[in-house]
Image 1 (tube, rainbow over the protein chains, first blue to last red):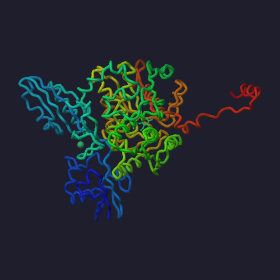
Image 2 (image 1 turned 90 degrees about the vertical axis):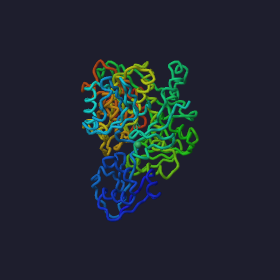
Image 3 (image 1 turned 120 degrees about the horizontal axis):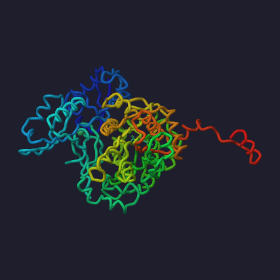
Image 4 (image 1 turned 135 degrees about the vertical axis):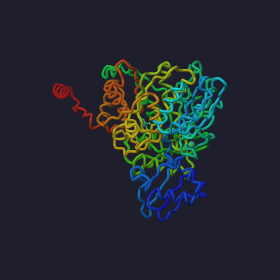
Length: 170
Length: 410
Ligand SMILES: Cc1ncc(COP(=O)(O)O)c(C=O)c1O
Ligand SMILES: [Zn+2]
């Protein structure tokens, strides 16, 4: 049997329980799956859209960061103690960019195309599109490489791309 | 005022009200303070600055405080001095030292963040201040909490320098020495913070605390008449300071105080605790933690909380990240002392040594201007240089003895 300590923000989803005991789990990955099986609402808190463990959660087994062990494949033995700790901050934020469309591009499905041509997920935060010009504030998720390719593509189309400071609300 | 709008997740963008929380409930991303910059400009003007006191609160519209601050009236506005002898030695046209080795009251830049954190903690109604620290933060929390009549609980790793231990105890703080590294302390404190109603400056108060580092950047800008240098070399532990200096420049630009920002932000670490530098060099955007082993204990963080944001800052500004060995750090400390008369701690040794390295690599050119961030004081880390310094010459109190020594030893 191993125990898992649930961080404060997630205890709402475990009926207020902070220590969960699990039987018959071999690796950290098993433990997380079992946890989600028991408390299904934990799934989208622990995993991102692609089903991967969210990067802002650090996992410790007997106080050692699993990144120094065998990551999610770290093997567990009886009495092991797992702690889920939200990384204080860390990780890579989603990027925000603002796109300025010239008249001849306003009517093209540029953003739709982006999502199909590159491995990125886009999300329109705000937009102002007229007959003959427009701008769109876009949130983009994806690897550095795919993001750069997408930006290159936009620039080639003659669309101006500007970064947006994460915390300046416009 | 109502300039501060709330908190926002740096990862998914969800908004939160102003409260003592630091992570997004949904995705666990870090939270950041959001300001309404259109309102800041009403009162924050060049003219207004002329009449304000020379401490961090002169930038109050850009700090996350809603009531009057409770401490920090002598924090900040440290000297920015031209380092002419160092310029000659390193072959760089313009070098400036931003000297937080003489920041008040505890001789490191951490007084900036703590003054903001404690003022905010008092607004939230806390009466106990706490932190996980590599030493300087410990000193600052202990001193500033004492000055406000607040209790403090300070957690430090096992192997800190004597000066930093004593420099915490003297203020009456409850000092807890944890058998482990800073990263162990930090993990432990995240757990403690959930069970105790305390203001942990770098955990639940972190979004507010971190904003205090912006004043280091505001001051550099103001002291240079809003003409920023071509390079800044900043030490990185958790990676917050470098991120916030950059944010400060961006804010000044948004407000029209500076035009284009052409400053390259260079991040400096010790080779023995270099997770951010190695991520930079390997082109990664996520941090792989390391086990720290360096004399630069103030920077000995293997799992930096803001590491990924520091990387973003460096890349966005076109800067670099570089590390130096313990020997180079010692040389850096000595160089700054012997050329400029400034005794810095290990973190300052790191930035001086990295500056020299970047010059040698051609990243910093001979006609460039550089600001070197000196963030702490050498009196706190005496043991690292002691063995390196030799001993004073001993004589009997008579003239002959001196003359004899003068002819032979000295
Ligand atoms: C003297 C000194 N300089 C620099 C730093 C690093 O700052 P940050 O953790 O914000 O990167 C610290 C503490 O961590 C410090 O004590
Ligand atoms: Zn979030």
